[in-house]
Image (cartoon, rainbow over all chains, first blue to last red):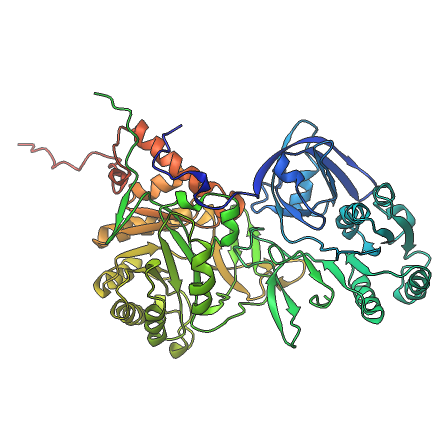
Amino acid sequence: MPDTALSPAPEACAGFPIEEALCEIVSNDAVNAEYRLMIARAPEAALRARAGQFFHLLCPATEAGQPFLRRPMSIYRIDPARGEIGFLYKVTGKGTRGLATLRPGEMLNALGPLGRGFTLPADTRHVMILGRGVGLATMAPLARLAAESGAAVTAVLSARSPELVMSRGELEAAGARVIEVVDTDGSSAPEEMEPRLAALHAERAFDYIATCGSNRLFRLARGLARSWGIPGEIALEQHMGCGLGMCYACVIPVALPGGGEEYRRVCWDGPVFTLEEAKGW
Amino acid sequence: MVTNSAPDLSVRIGSLTLKNPVMPASGTIAEGMTQVIDMGRLGAIVLKTITPDLRQGTLPPRVAEYRDATLFSIGIPSKGPDYLLEHTLPAYAACDAPLVASVSADTAEDFGKLAAYISDPRIAAIEANISCPNLKADGRAFGMDPEATREVLERMVAATRIPVWAKLTPNVGDITVFARVAEEAGCEAVIVGNAILGMAVDAEAMRPRLGNVMGGLTGPAVKPILLRMVHQCAKAVQIPVIGCGGITGGEDAVEYMLAGATAVQVGTANFIRPHTMTEAVDWIADYCTRHGLSAAREITGALRPLHAPATAPTETV
C-alpha cells in the first residue's frame, strides 16, 4: 500500500457511523412461495441499526448482469447478542434475484445503517402496528423496540391469503399480540378493520400507530390516529440512487404543517415519516 | 538511487494547489458522505449546485438504471445561496479540503449576481453549471451556445475574485469551442464534462421511466466519450482540464490524466462505492511509485504514441 502520510488523520472529519459492512451469509432460505429470509453475521456498526432504518445492498450479479445501483432493504432482524442482522425480501427484480443466489459463507456488502427510523414517544404504553406484505418486515424491529421500552404491542398483519401472512413468529417472539387479516375472507377491508381496531382501542387505549406496506392501511392508520389524537409514523419506499441523501433521486412529496408540500429524501429524511407528513400514493 | 519517499500528489488548478487530483462531481456528495469517508483526504470538495431561487426539482421517478450507467433527472433542487453560506459550508468546516461551490441560474445576469453573492473566503472556487436551460433563449442550455457560455462566464469572472471553473456539457458538436470560450472568459479550469442527455422507456408500461422523460446519462458506460473530449480539450486550451465521466477508481482517473486531465471528478461511483474517491487517491500514489514518477502531475498528458512517428518515405533513387 502507498504511504498515506500526505493525508490528514481520519478524525479530521467527524466519526464514521455508516460503513460498507461486509456481512457473512448465515442462511438465505424461502419462508413461503414469495419471500426469503437472509441472515448475515454483521460487524458492530451494522448491529447498531435502529427499527425502521435500512441498508443499501450491493447485489450479486445474475445471468441478467450486475445490478448497477445498490438496492435499499429495510432491516427485519437486529440481533446484537448473536451478531446477526436479517432481511426479509420478495424476489421481484434483478437486485433481489441476485440476493437470492447468496449461499452461506458468501459475503454481502451492506452500506448502513441508513436513514431515520421510528421514533417511539417516551412513555408509550400501547403500540399499534399495521403492516402488509413486505411492509411487515420493517415492523418486526419496532415491536422489539416497543417491548424494550415497556410498551405493549398489538400487530395487525394483512395479507392476500392466510398462507402469505408473514412475521407472525418474529412479532410474537418480541411479545406482540398478533391479529391476522386477509383478503380471502374480507377481513382486511378497511371498513371491516376499523370497528375491530376501535374495539381494541376501547379495551386498552393505543398511544402510537406505525404502518408500512399499504396505501389503504396508511389511510386507515392516519384516520384512527387523528380521531384518537395520537401520533403515528409510516415507513415509505422510493426508487433510490445513493442511500446517503446525496443524489436527491428518492424524493417524495410531504405535507407541510402550514399547508403546501415539499419534496423530502426517503433515504435521508426518512424512510420513516409522520402520518401527517405522508401523502397517499 | 531508489527512494522510498511518497509521491507528491499535489496538482495546480489555476491559482489553487490541491493536495491530490481527486474530487467529487457536483451533486454526487452531500453532508451524508462525511459519515462514511474522510472527506478531508480529497483534493477538493465540490458542492451541489445552487440557484438564486428555491427549487424543488423534477417530478419523480428521478433515476433509471442501465447496465453500467444510470439516467438521473433531478432538476437542480436548491435551497438557495443563504442555505449554502449558513448550513452547507459549516457542515464541511472540519474537513481539510478546499470547498468548491457550484452555481446555476436562469439568466447570465443572475449567474454573475450569484457568484458575487457567495464570494465568501470559505469558498476556494466557483464552478459554473451551464448545462441548465437559459430562460431567455427558449430553454436552450447556456452551455450549448458559445455566446451564451461566454456571457455567463465573463459575468461570473467579473463579479468575483474567487477562481471560476466552467463545467462543460458534452451535448455539443465540438466541445473544444466551449473550452476555448471558457479560457478566453478568464476561467481557471474547465470540467469535461457534465452528463450526456438521454432517455429511458419502460416497454411493458409503454411509458417513460423518468418523470422528466429525459435525463443525464452517467456511469462507466459514458467514459470513452468523455475521455475523448478531455483529450481534445487538453490540446485546445492552456488552462487545466478536469476530467469527469464514469470514473470508478484510480485506474480510470489515471486514464483521464494520461489523456490530458490535471485532476478528476468522481460522480456516480460515489452512490455505489462511497470509498471510491479515497481509494483512488491511494491507487494514484501506488501508480506513481510503480511507474517511477515522483509526482502525480507528471501523469497529465503523458500518453505515449501507440505507433512510432511517421517517417518520410525512403528515397528510392
